Image 1 (tube, rainbow, N blue to C red):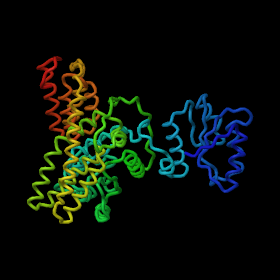
Image 2 (cartoon, helix red, strand yellow; image 1 turned 90 degrees about the horizontal axis):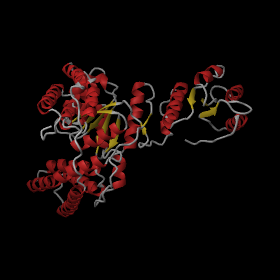
Image 3 (cartoon, rainbow, N blue to C red; image 1 turned 60 degrees about the vertical axis):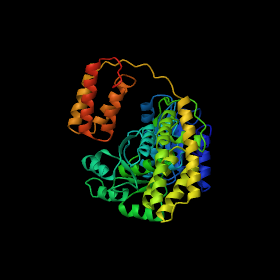
Image 4 (cartoon, rainbow, N blue to C red; image 1 turned 135 degrees about the vertical axis):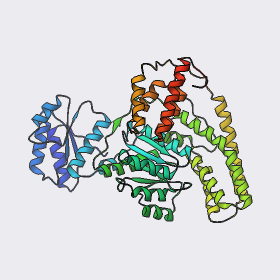
Amino acid sequence: WAATGVEGGQALVDACLARVVGGGQIDCILLDWRMPGMDGIEAIARLGDWLDTERMPVVIMVTAYDRDALIRAAAEVRPHGVLTKPVNPSALFNTVNEAVYVERHDLSQVILGTRVDVSHSLWLKGARVLVVDDSRMNLDVVSRILVHEGAIAICCELGDEAVSVLAANAAHFDAVLMDLQMPGMDGCEATRAIRRLPGCRRLPVIALTAGATTTEKARADAAGMTGFLSKPVDPVRLVRTLREQIEANRGEPLPLHPRDADSADTGAWPELPGIDIDAVRARLGNDLALFRQLMQACAREFATVLDEIDTLAGRGELPGVADRAHKLHGQLGNIGAGELARLAGQIERSARAGRTLDRALFERFASAVARLGEAVSVWTATAATPAPAVAQVDLERLEPLIARLRRDLADQKMSALGLCDQLLRQLQGSAHDAAGQALAQAVSGLRFKAALRALDALVDTAGRTGEAPDDEA
């Protein structure tokens, strides 16, 4: 924000009148209540005498004293908001944003003028987002960004699965992030089906694409999509796009929340060939453990996918080449391998245009991917850490929570998501952690019957093993 400070009520009145009379604009005034000489209430009353409602800025009063006492004392001038000292960034943003919206009915002014810092605040707290992508890696990255910002992320790997989830739970979701290119029902077809569902005509559906062409954008617009985000997803653009569309759909501001102390893995990040570590750290919220998982998954897939491209190209099956290159393009972008992602995109575009595989380009690409894979193998081997001690968990004490979760799963209620999250936090680091993760995967995919089976298996395993760690837990 472009902020100017003045000392005292009279100085505020003089500065505001000079700015407005000179043709300038002031969007918001933040002023203290009790000041020597002219206090904040008198200063606002003086400005009200000179400025009509069109030119009067939004007024937020600040006090270190009793908030209710200030509201009573300021009843005549009626400030648009009140802040209590000490003021934190979240409270400041929320108070100004709410006041601007109420006074001017503008949901975008404050956020457009705000630097979105995803390291200190939760920008999407409580937002419920359905993420649809056939790539497990893309789902992991996007859902982790959303959760890092306080959102609730539900994942689907197929378009028709997403349609089924929304058909049963449309009111639960605030937005959908939809991949365009998926096997079976693609993103555009899924969006058209979603628009036909009760309660989904205005639901934000935002396209995820590795590089949208004009034709793709036209198809997405015609299908009823409301926005576009490029892969790899930039956290700041994701936050801005979702806030804009969710707020517009809700018709009210989405509050900002302070972030608790960061508990992400703070170990040393590696130097890997072709990887922009700074960019990927920002995208993953400094989550080294997630980066390690993604790199290990990529290393396992690299050789297989490259062999598939080579084989398919030899048979002249160019659509298959394009599909495999498209998958690599997204994976490489997620891990910060920008140049390799560019080469994968070049291979994909060439195949979709019906051109045979450029052998020199492919060999250069395959060689660079192989070097990266080898470096990842070395790093993950040297970065291996001993298994942590197993925490003890009293499942008998958790029986009321487990019983509530079982009822909600049987009734297919969305409240099961929150209950499952509570149970997982209790199981973290225990002998039952792995069984809890199997339950979480079923619940997050809204596979209620599978989740019930996973919950029964967890309880059954606990009954057989007690609290002693076991390899099957």
